[in-house]
Length: 179
Length: 288
Image (cartoon, rainbow over all chains, first blue to last red; front, top):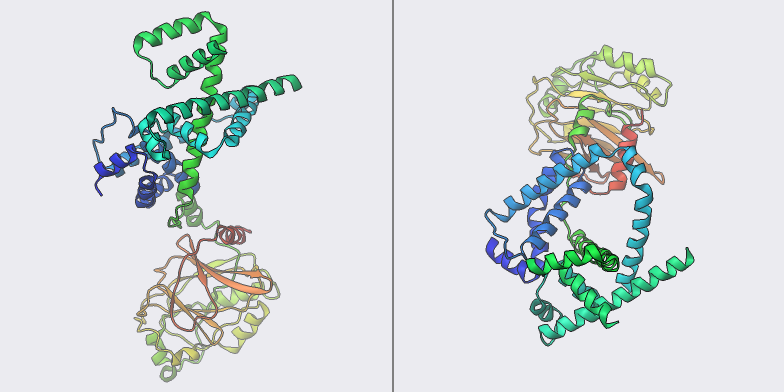
């Protein structure tokens, strides 16, 4: 399978290809981070992030693979790790204290939304994820989830989103009421 | 309600990046003058972020399920740690075999070719053993450079000292029955660690260099033979006692290797994955 085939597959949302890439390049990418003072856990996390970036970027029409996939992943890993090291060195107690109150509030809403997403049906969850994260077209979503056509996928997406809006808003107002 | 739906769709379109430039500018103007719309935008933005986070977590969970080869390569920090010798303590015994007062060339000549000598500096060995006699835990370890080309029987004096420290020196005559190696007997041998047995142990270890095996081990008559050339690098043997079962591990080149006690054939030394055991071993090594 060539790199071009892999990118084509990723564009269609074939998740097996991300598994394949992960396994194929694992040792090289993780070693890269470990050699640069990272733990294996950190290395794995960074490598997974890099693969997910590729997964998303490959979907964009602007994406052009100008090198081998492994070279691309290598440079994304390096950039992410550099940022992570910078973040670590900036991370002082002052910064934590400053953001504490804001973060608590944000965390609470994030938790509520997270619970609401999880309470949706599996198909709803998948549609929303494919649409917003994977940026898949309605045609591809319909094909992947076995809908009759893109219009059906569009209607389902709309309804699922409405359902999530409602769920979260009702939880928010319940929370405000309690507060 | 209908109005709300239109707003939602518009916000959704904006956040998904599906508006053209003119639409975008128009929408941003509206937001600037409409706090309700701004509120809705923030709300939708939060939802979409959460959906993205959930999907990312799903993909990561998927990747985490894929079996990968666990890296045992140590971090640079750890290498430094080891190099500085801080970490080389704990665990158990690599012990020393020293010169005999009665060299019997006839008796040992065949052994000389088979086993690389382990220790020569009897005085150093004895001194150290004596200084620690009666102690269950030896608090210091020394690296003893060895240079002998002869393997000799252990004399009585050494045996008695060894007993006090729970270190039994091996009887290398047993090796005469083994066809383990063809070593170059005048090569100065390994640096050897005499380490602190935090766990009392009567383990006996012999190093056999230049065998046909690289980095193997075997058990024979209750003794452990390491068929390895450590190339002068320090190593350590650590025992973990779990439910009265003793499990040995070799620590070398910043990696741990499992040593089973039932291998009578030469068995390759292999690393293992259990982070729990690695943690315990690190703890033992860093104990002091």
